[in-house]
Image (cartoon, rainbow, N blue to C red; front, side, top):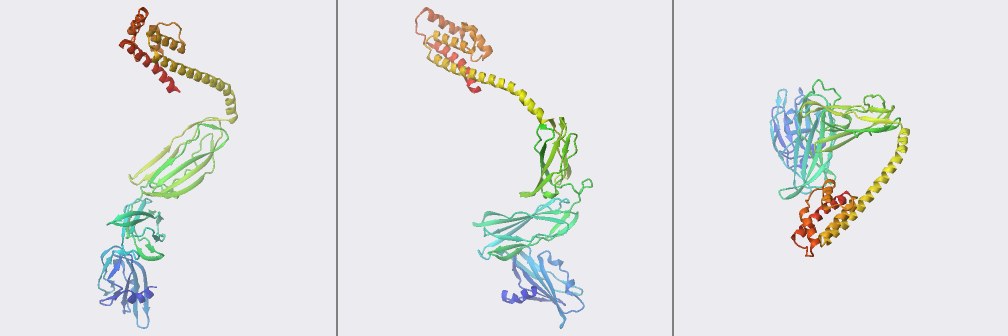
Length: 493
């Protein structure tokens, strides 16, 4: 394949560049390459005592990714050719380094990497990469992110699933966010991966490329820079099955009143931030408790994602049955996990609960026995409500009578009506009525009894007009007292 592509190079670029040195000749397709586009390199030698398959290509890792390589040997002439297909990692000045093979060597070739260009919009494409941490704990999530800022709002980005030894890799969803750069409408396409190193030690990783597909044609391939991870080993007290991340447990409590011998389900949800669903702790078999029997649980795993990466959850539906009556205690549920942020062991505890367990037939007997009492209580409640409603209506009439009062005698009749409404003895003096009112209902605002008696007796002796200031003050005070009672009755309703 590389040989076929190399044959097409003269028709694709103006000319090739040839750099020869002692024994090794290097030819490149161009001295300038676009980010995401391939650069073809050919290394040639006629020396029979060496083999180009032994050529050290590690010097290319700082600037390029070797996507393909192919060695061709011409037995007739003894010429060896190594064809390389390279992709640049970043924009700027790069170089094909000096190759050494035994006593042979080549010259360095400078290469200029330019910005990627969208073929349809003729606009530049920006590529940004980010790594959450390069010193993770064993089994801790490492979040990788690649942002491709392109003019196309609808774009297909294809990434092959990674197969890395000792590394679990989960591809997250592709998101697109409109942005504006230099006055131009662009779209930020975000790709994310969650990596989990299952073993400790130094790891150097190379991720598969991301294909930039425009109108069904792959125009560019962008590579993530090489990852240099220093995976820290977990403390010796952390078992191999303990989750590393952030855990949360949600378990709605079982009902306090339960029935003996009846099957019920206890649903427990375990959520792990930065954890695959299958790595969550297994709580399908709680600790045995006297009077309770647990059966085989059903587990449902689910994986979602949020801004912090992968979010796994496991829903356990645990069937159980109470086998005895009385006051029983459900088991305590304890979940442990290792927190990578604080490097400490943490525990989540769901405390045990007390349950009243009775036979169902006993519950029915209790209900039958409680029915007459409930009926009597209901009748008493209805009678009380009716009395309150009648009292509210009577105080509404009393307030209207106070507003229409023109003499102290009218106010005295209103006080007598309130005595009748409250069920107090008839014929109470104003002073005794006010004493009862303060004790039974309220003592504020204060009623000026002196003014009341003065106005009342003045009205008995004369026929003067009692619309003065003293009468108005007395009428206002009585209105406030009665209105407080009325408002309390109305609020109660």
